[in-house]
Length: 480
Image (cartoon, rainbow, N blue to C red; front, side, top):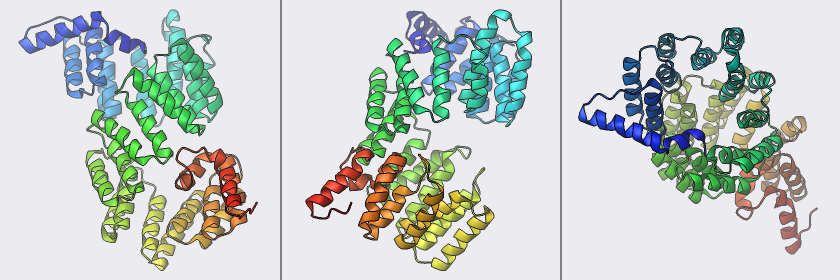
């Protein structure tokens, strides 16, 4: 179990929390240190009690002007939760000791949020000479971990290489996270398994292991790791999400929805769970029910949430399935107004909806516009091919996927599963088996996504080819 969780369950912390809450409820004054109050605020924050967390931090800041811990926490809330850079700067600049390590980290985080990771790197490097020599080892490792928190594995690796504390669990965890970010799931999994040997009650390690197993297409193992984490903490949001994603990937949409619902109860003010529940319902043919969940998701989501554009696309597809084309186009128009939207991707979605409803000429115009705007991007070409396939034009999609896969022929590349599916629809049995086998070897995640409904639930994609061959043999059609 993580150290902070252990502390929050300790009698020492429970006594501090009781004194604070008793004093607050009775209107009495209770002097507590800035660190103690910050711990209480973090405890509230972890429980989703953001209002109480902020109130406690504001009280700590008023009681201890210039103290680093409450100001850093308040600054991070402004930066991460409120997306308010100016407010974050206001808090960090109030800290008396500007060489406090957490103060330095927050300055750097603000720079990263301003898309200035190089400036953050230089700033942190320049401060090494200013801090206490005894703090340098922790400083270096903390920075490596911070850069990984912002998904900057190259920067994280540079700082990790400066550390000689290779036996520390934080060092090894950061090394595993870097490996994961770089797609080296085998190394990442190996390290997390070693960490779990030493700390089998760490939900964070189990969740990370589940993620590496999922990306390695070992979905059942990923679900099992998630279940260990849930056993440790039934309200672990990451564990519930991981298990739900695993079940969804296996095509078990009904069970997946149950875990998304549990996640939604823990995060009622967020729209992510509602979006995923909608996806489950849509995949089980319940478009009208899915629509209600997508609408609720969009009501809950902040405009800065990365899922907002995805939610609007899901809404558009669902309206389209229900024959509500005008509503679908309204959702597309809303998506185009979102911050950071990829207009060409949305143009492909517009073309998809038009094609789905027989407006072939208008659909082609959208597709051509997106291709020209991106200098005939392979990614856009691939998205168009998927739309053509989904809208019932397998012969055209076949030619598109065949051209795409001839260029993209490396392990992990997409397209072969779609090409195999085109062959299946066109009754090209020999080519179907050929591309099915290649798809399951090259990109099993895509193969599962496309063919999950055509094979027994839970079957590993590596077994799809042999299963299909044996089925054909039994039926007297050995087309190998």
